[in-house]
Length: 225
View 1: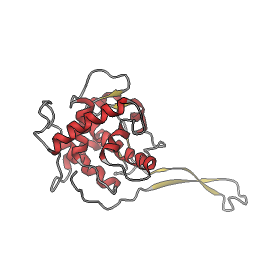
View 2: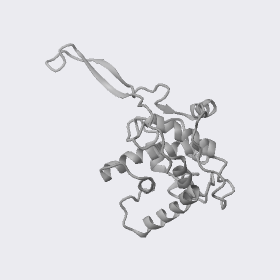
View 3: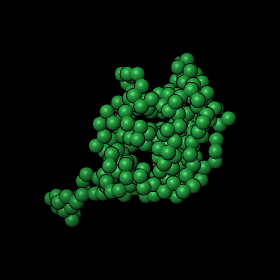
View 4: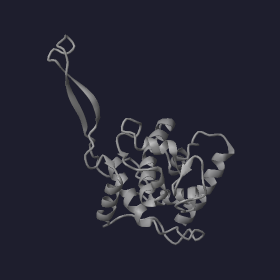
């Protein structure tokens, strides 16, 4: 896997609301804090308008793109390369992980999930090009949930059929899965372990895990060939 440059960390801002209460030993000044939450300034969340603005204005100088002309079985394999490059770089910078995610990892994931179809055959659990589950979709917009340090806003389920929205959501979720996989393994996950965690089968002992890994390896291997 290509070696990627580690990016400097950006601090998340938290906002607190002062609230007047009766003077007591616990609150001698008569003020306490409530509703402690992320301050939703630019850079802490994305809505459809901001997603479009970020993508349109992103500095593409020196951007690392996924490999093209390798996944010949899919007619749409390369049309999202610009989207993948921009959002991979955006979230690598945003989360400043020890091992930045390679855009080829995400491209191989999408190949294994949907074959680059923006609206693959109906799935009762997952939707769109990145096959984001309904549960994950809710988490990614929950300002009090496990992904609250960076969420999405004002996005409908039907928007998951739009790759320009689904791909950044997928990459953001991969960074969350990187953290949960690290917690489970006690170390940074490799790219295969990260993909298994995204699919919810990192610790699975079923044949489904082997099939999913084989499918992902096939596409990733072609991209790196």
